Length: 544
Image (cartoon, rainbow, N blue to C red; front, side, top):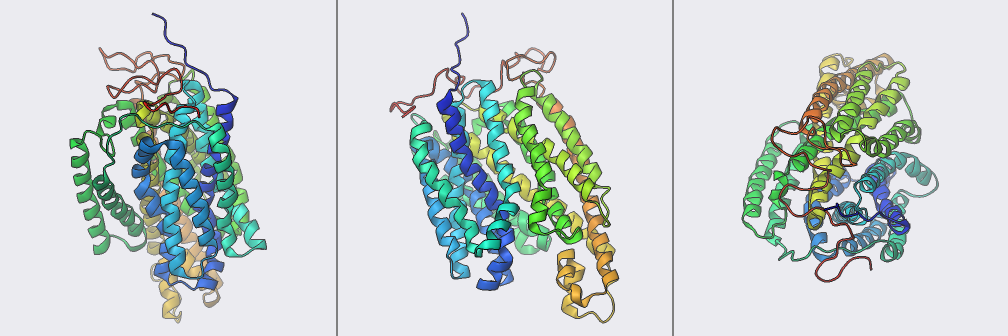
């Protein structure tokens, strides 16, 4: 019996991908643009230090907390419908944030943006799996999708800097409005609807348990980088783990769970999630430390820093688009391992950066780091969503996004804490005598603190602080290099059973006696292979 022909995507689907890329770029912009707006925002609203942290973190907490919920909700009510609801909400709340006249209102708006943002990423990714049934095209489309988020992050400082040069701080939030309008007009024309058939009741108690698990854990990870393992941080981590256990136990007993734990029985799904999680740890720490190095040590403005990040962003683009193409002939595990090896080289270059002119090493080293990220994000995400049956694509997409959010947060916490520890150890008791107590405390804590009191510090001591911060960067990047090298080896092993995107099985990767998978995208006992035509549920939803 001949294999069924998989329908290739046409002009409508590729046009739909362009529409789906818009909110992805927007979310990437939103990650970085607020850092530029913070000084002028603080001057007008005068938030306390605690309020400033919540302005920055409320968005990330809520988007991470609601990803699983929104991914499953999209499977139930319709992925295009949820995308349009989320886009409309994101645009409207962005206007509220732009014109906030109090810190409390801005924090509330940022939290609402996080909830709205959580609808966008899983919906866009799940819809891509519906629109591009052919493995080749799906992998390329996911590569474009992954690149657009990174492109948004890279453009954030540049676009934000230009807008803040001409308008007030709230203008940075208004970028979402035209994007939302375009999506609301174009989505019904170019994007198909999909709703999973027979999805059952929505698990509201599971939603509460998932939030009680994820939010404290994300909070603990973020706070440990700034405050260390203090009692509130440990208490939050313990509470998050307890609720995580309760959530998993409940999901295992339900016929229609919020998160189908059977997805984890698929080797491809679990292995790819692990690679995404660990791979993003090094990137999260590097992004934090490199940004600080460019501005505090190299003395670049945010806009200049954003421009210098252009070449690394281009290398990520090349990897995200090129890795799926290479994976048509080379098993994905080998492609991921090879690009992670190049990332290891990038981290090694960053260990050689010094405080007296390391710009070339920073750009080249971080470019290689981003090269690995592009391949891991594109191929890892493709393997995760491809391993799930079509009706679970939203849930699988949400898991992919959740582990990446967690990986970035862990990278900031672990590598950021390591770099800070090195800085404090090297600065030690070298703060000049007679320095005001407040200035001495700030300078001993971080280079940012020392820079804020530069007018009260001897110039040669500030140079010493920059050297200590650079040593912290070097040490953290050495740890990232070791971890990434180990991950490269592990990727070659745990992903060895996966054949090429064209369906060729690896020569000797699968376990003895087990059939190799013909292509990524077929789950292990979770449901049938992806259909050869656009999936239609019991209510006749397909292209509408």
